[in-house]
Length: 359
Image: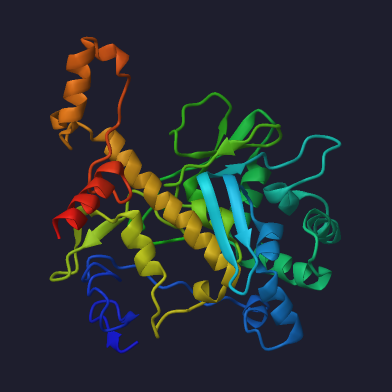
């Protein structure tokens, strides 16, 4: 890597696009903090125990993740180059703060069940192939440093009965803080409200004790930290709709929003001034990249679905012909046309084929 971006100091190869890291200064993200001990030592890979941790980093993340990871199908190729693939849709789901009677706690529930030893026992029982001493060290670290864990503890103490629920706002920012700051969620962003009160559809709603699961919106600011505590050990905010671009000339915020693609492209770049903890997470990093790429595709598809008129899909001749030939537009159904600008769409591939035939 022989090129340094003048805007964000990202390291790149000479042939790479100048704007791939920060859109030429329009995307400015504060660096992630380096992890504290003992996670820092476990990430070093210099001891037998740290090598074991890195080889099983996805298992240890599963021990502490607060949401479940689901997809239509998962493919893991364990060859000389381990590969993580998914097919279909990815979704994260969260349950209640406490388990139902006579049920074992899972995911988020383990943080609030029993004492320290019972929590470690439950984590090791749920996820095989882990070492008790490492789980205990990481558990103490998350209870001390992870702001999401602290948030849920405080909210649980404030819930008078099971008739109340915890709501983590998707877009609310702490009072007095600038909306661009990537603050880990604080108690000010959380409301304890009675069941039945109106909430935004993208808010995370967690009840004290029930058997239902809620799917978390990909654009919720805590989507990443709830699923990847080993990466976002502080519970930092991820991508959300309120992020604005910066004018590289004046340094002030503009009205244009940062896209998910630009956010994560900037986040995974190598910089001397920021921690490379994310890039050291090996197979967990692979899973994270696949997960976030699915989020990027979901955002693009949602935009296309909601902006069919703006994209002038009514001008597509094949759709007009289908309506004209059938004589009844209701038989066509509610079509969503993917434009040629969407990579991998039929029209995109058709243009590639036409270009190949031309040359």
